[in-house]
Amino acid sequence: MRLKLKTVFVLYFMVSLLGLIYALMQLGQRCDCTDHDMSRDRVISRLRGELHSIREQMKKAEATKPPKAPLSTIYVITPTYARLVQKAELTRISQTFLHVPQLHWILVEDSANRTSLVSEFLAHSGLTYTHLHVPTPRDRKLQEGDPSWLKPRGAEQRNEGLRWLREESTRGRQREPGVVYFADDDNTYSLQLFEEMRGTRTVSVWPVGLVGGMRFERPVVEGGRVVRFHTGWRPGRPFPIDMAGFAVSLRLVLANPESRFDGNAPMGFLESSFLQGMVTMEELEPKADMCAKVLVWHTRTEKPKMKREDALQKQGLGSDPGVEV
Image (cartoon, rainbow, N blue to C red; front, side, top):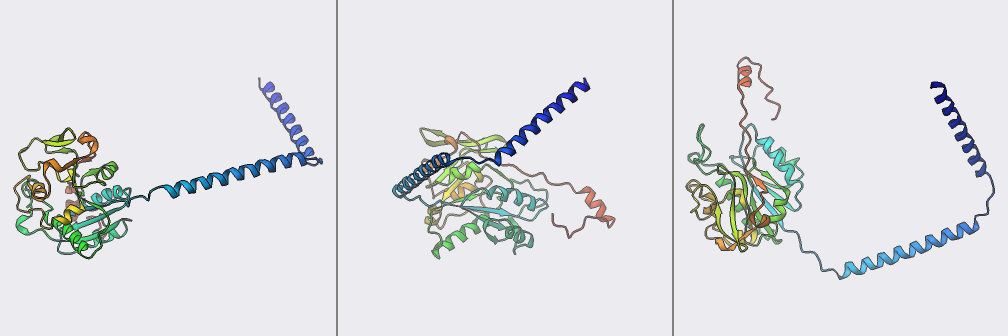
């Protein structure tokens, strides 16, 4: 069997070699290719003419098209505070924002000063951003061991973002259409969500997943209008909606300079304190397939357990504090 395969291989090699030699010999032969060259030139000339014609037609079509409307800017206001997972959270959310065109990130630290961690992070984020800071008053801060729902969080930071937007407006820097969205740094966002909200005229709304002890909360839509809310807690609130479940047109924000978040609002009423007086339920704009699709999730990062780190620090063997986490 080996002999037969070897013989076949040798014969194949010889035939190929002879074919190659013949082809090389033909390259040296003179050939009258005048007719062939003339035919080829005619084809090239015809194709060039067709290409020119197509280009002219495209120019005419572009000239008759109406000019495109400017893309609305999405202003995303995000409160943030110092903790072990802060940089991880900001990295994750910023990677989403990088895929959203015409987005301006307003990141507001719960701090008396801008921190170097957040400043450096934003400088290398690749995003258009504004870096603000304002501390939460001590009496409104959650204490160690307090449940997260005990006091409203992020009210001062969101209000600071709104203040900046209104101040920029008075300087004539907000002439383009825009949308304002309040995005916490620990939630998960679909890119589709931002395109859904971009055309907001008043206040647009949609479902939020994994919130309020439920699979999702959402506005209930009948006949194209929001008639009530699907929620498991206090459905009688003026707007029983999660912070991640609505966006407001910049025009409406600027037209209501007194609208702000009440840091003393009862549990679950923070969103209502902002939306009341600005919009009615009948004016809400249902998005995300008439509030049938979940495009944002109220996720939370688990608090890291540092038992081994604490034990090593007591021995003087803790992790290098110079390494930013």
